[in-house]
Image 1: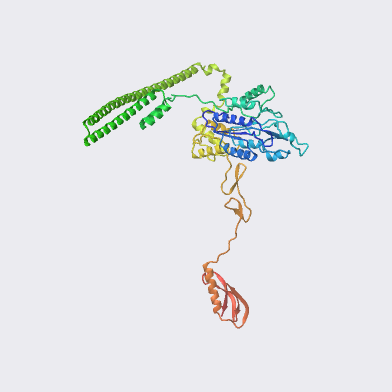
Image 2: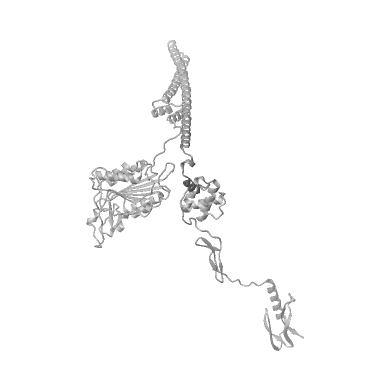
Length: 599
């Protein structure tokens, strides 16, 4: 699986930025808060899905922030942590120092700081890239005043070298291990300024980007500070920001948004709506249309006002007549009414003129839009036709330039090529399906036979492989990519599942054997067999009651013969003159039972 964030992938990228400046037990640092704000803004402009910027955190706040960030990295492809502030190295282990730390002895480091491994643990769930950037190599003020509980315990200068154990993990130091970094004389440190300059460049591999960062910091510090990166990535480029794909096909008309707003204002047909449209789009074709619509509304308002004045004049005239006003007042009122009526008629005509102009402009707009749409479709069709012709011409030229196989290659090489296996792309659909099924059986994800039929069982087995191998192949069909991924697995991927009475023994299911007196229980484990108590039948109970009644009804013998008869009712001596013998069972005549026989 490649690490490049291609344009077709919607990879989730998350970032955590921490800047500690206001230390309570040490002099305040000038740049970490500024650097954290600058780098956080860089991640937001780079299009990260989640960017959390935290400033001046205490120890408990840093632990809680890292714990919350670890939850966000579970579904992320790329996770980045940037820390600016004080750090310390103790016996080869690096620690980040919160703002409330008071490091009086070397033992306080374990209780009041955060190990760098905690940050590595937070980015561990990310699938493609785990990046830690530490701008914490400044000269540590605690190292000089800190008391040593053991004379052999070493407190280093700067931070110690770190070699990540997880793949696709990088740790970038502002200064090489064992050296310190400059806080800079400007608003931001040289390291932070170089980061925001090179990391967000689209398509630039991180390793090359950090190389450019190194060069800039060396020049800015007079070759005194050298940033360093630990860890390794694969062979593919891993940019922090992917290159956006070039737009293809007909482009969206920039006037579409203006047209939609114009149509919305046209539906409202109010002065406020058109004034809001003109405030947003003061110039252009649609602005002129909006001004025409606004003039139309103004003409209507003028006409309504004139009509209202004419109505008021008529009312005044009627009032004067009703009150038998003087002739001069009546003439004056009549003249005013006539003037108002003339104004109303003029306003009505103006309204009709403006309405006709607006309708003509609307028709012109629709014609212009139809022409622009036809032109765009024609250009898109011509472009597609040209691309198809160019592709066909290139294929034709490639086929014409390709020499015949029998003249291009010597005969010995032809024989070797004849026996070489065909590439995977030449497999038929049935052969590809059967090959994928065979590999799924080999890795333990498919129990059915490889019959070339991509059934529901085969789709379920591919889903199991995706689950346990961490892949995302389409389970609805067999593909060359899935076949290559299956062949790359050396052994079993899916866990072995056995039926009841069997257990997993390596790659096979073995039958469970229990010792004497034990059997396989419902939980597939050996359990002791419980003994069943005998249950008396109804016939035995009835026979026992009959014998008891006979015994109780028989008269007691005055003298015993020395023999005793026993049955279900108990034991008693044989009566005098009788003897012990056998007789047929009253319910089952074929069965003989002990009986007392008297002559």
